[in-house]
Image (cartoon, rainbow, N blue to C red; front, side):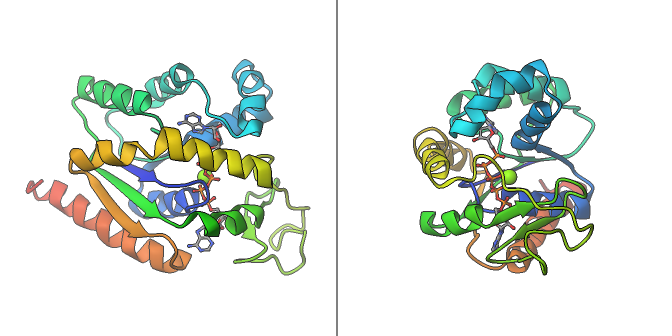
Length: 221
Ligand code: AP5
Ligand code: MG
């Protein structure tokens, strides 16, 4: 089973992918998290991608496709968050999955208006110690700017600055949004209203994913 969570920066891909992967024991691949991890460890890849990520542009397709190629295991079930996000990546991924006897089962589009995204991203905070997530507007820490769980000072993502968010929106519009047509024509696209609360969005996703998994289990898919 290969599920893709698709949507604007800040639409809730990461938030929901963590919960869904936990609930259904799916492998969660977030290309953004993988790249940030490389930067943190100061690896060759990290050095190569740091300035690109900080500027809000996309990493070259070949590098991202290579990461997917080396991480993917056809015997596991996945939820992808932030991949594919160019037509080049989606073509590569379809062809690659076909060589593994697999395909994309469902693409869930977390639909959200652009104006909501700014608050979500400007308010996002993460604890560098325990990994807990907060949002100063929607889920504020009790003692801002410190983590409720371990008391460590919370961090803001470097690309969550107003001008970089603006750039990420433009990149989404021109390079990523065209994938909606691509997946719609393949009949795998499902739209979800991502303006609802985290809990409501999660409940909707639960229904969609369990229905798909049951169909796979009872062979009607
Ligand atoms: P990536 O890390 O994928 O970032 P993104 O797509 O810009 O998306 P975000 O992670 O910012 O948002 P999200 O949708 O996960 O929202 P979240 O759940 O956190 O990519 C970063 C960079 O890496 C790219 O710019 C590019 O340079 C590079 N990259 C990555 N993948 C690549 C690829 N495939 N090809 C090329 N380059 C690539 O939610 C946001 C906030 O809102 C949180 O604070 C959350 O608590 C809050 N929130 C979530 N849901 C709700 C809700 N329902 N109500 C209220 N608040 C909510
Ligand atoms: Mg994310």
